[in-house]
Image (tube, rainbow, N blue to C red; front, side):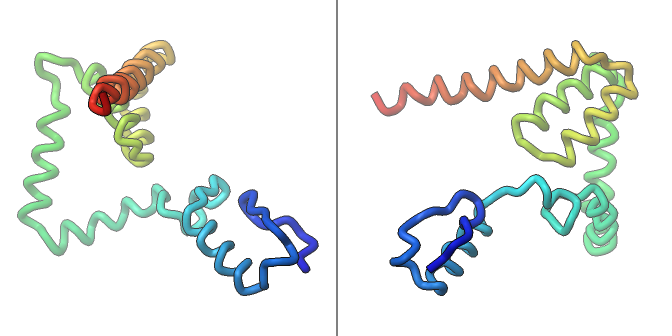
Length: 142
């Protein structure tokens, strides 16, 4: 009989579950629980992982050289200012939910002079587009 609560809110008939069943349930739950405490502690997202991009440069030099040139060209001043491009990048990063992109482009937007108000509006535009996609796709079941 288990006396302690199970992790991630698991519950159930304590008498009916064997320890093995609990271990399996814990592992399944662990595999699907996102634990913010793990950020930076061996978790998927850790800004230090970006140093590993050198491996891509080493193993696919031509493709990565092309990528870096494309990335640089995309963010150069043109019809849109650097700040506007970074605000767009923040909005896109929020919709793709890439923590690396969110962090890098938020910093770049701030470095380009973006204000809290501009970042807030970019975030709301991203949220509206994401929500709008759900609403318009809701027409499919009917």
